[in-house]
Image 1 (tube, rainbow over the protein chains, first blue to last red):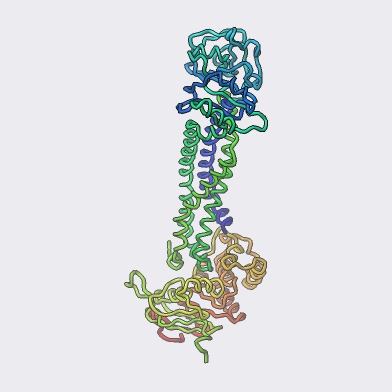
Image 2 (cartoon, rainbow over the protein chains, first blue to last red):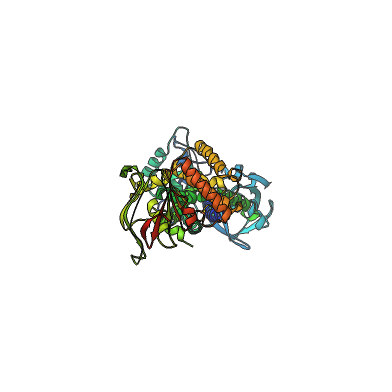
Length: 365
Length: 227
């Protein structure tokens, strides 16, 4: 009966499902977009390492001050395979007031991970202050390898141009760490130290060592950092809240559809009761229809959001900023919300339908 | 002589009113119909025939009195649902079939309600459809059927779960003369050949007199028997 009823009222079913689909698509897109942004931040921080060390009690990693020597100290520990300092800053370029700048060492994996479009890593050193630009940064700053570029209050030779997968890195400037420190008067410090663990070693040893020797700093596993970093938490909460609100608006269309569905077939429902349908069967039928509409809407919304995110990724300005992968957790979240909305939306119509008095309903015009 | 246990329908001193008691429709009605009985409720419009049928099927709750069908009290919801699924078939003046479903789909609704086996139901559907002459129209949507076909379809739907008691409320009231005769004859034949009980509401004395027993109603009361 549930399938038959939905098939009979295709337009109404389609409108209800479309409401849910738009809600799901909006929710998954927002979650996907912001989730993608968070993942990119995470990858910037992690960079082939399992842990990140930063200063305790800072509101943002830009304000974190970690002594550069810490990287050297950590490298000497048996439980650490590698440790690299990174200084995050914002720099101004002509026509571009905000450009992300990464102060990194010449052996940073970013320089080998990216695809060199111009120049190379040979000139990326503190001796000549050569900087490397992400492809998009080179594009909007109109700079080429071998030329010079005005950044902040200095002029720097461009050592090369790299195509990076990560949008933030692709639109950023890489400076030798020492050059970056001097440019921002932050000699001797970095924002974070990425720590790669030695084979078979755990994060507890690093944490323990840090607590004993550098109580002002903290070391977190990447996953732990993502969970606890307030900026990520705010982004994720915003994504779910905005998505949830869009979703609830979509859910109202299901309620509307189901109310309409009941009120336009009062006589049919009465006949079903005359034919022996119990109140429970009638209610289950209405809930079933609502759940099926929600399921169709969720599936359509999922496809729509994947398509939408892929389409957005194709926009040149957004390349590298969008991760169109939507995890099962997000889909499960959207599905749960869809089912909840469907059940809540069908509550009143189902109750109304179940309590119809058949004889009265058959007199209804 | 029939005992109380033999009665398919027992209506004892039933009172029913609407609009908060302002409109009294049934005023102390008592009616006994034995198993296999074919009874016509006759009377002018508004005399309470339809309400009495609704009361017998449990579609209307009574203010006072007792209604039993096949020994079960219809006031009890569980019993009422069981009766509507297995013991009572109902045919209305208007077919009340769902216009955008096929006739076969409409007829399967009572089977779905009762949780009957599909294969058995399909066999029965074809048997009844053949008996009523709509077997070639089963795959058609109701909106494509004629008035007579629709009413015959409604009769098939009412008989799908092989009920003991068939309640018919002016079943031929919306049909032309030719179809009225055909449907009525068909109904009587189906009921008699299967030994089922029929309670029929009609204001047409011509149809009523072809039933074994005619109960005359007037102003919410049973006035007497015979035309």
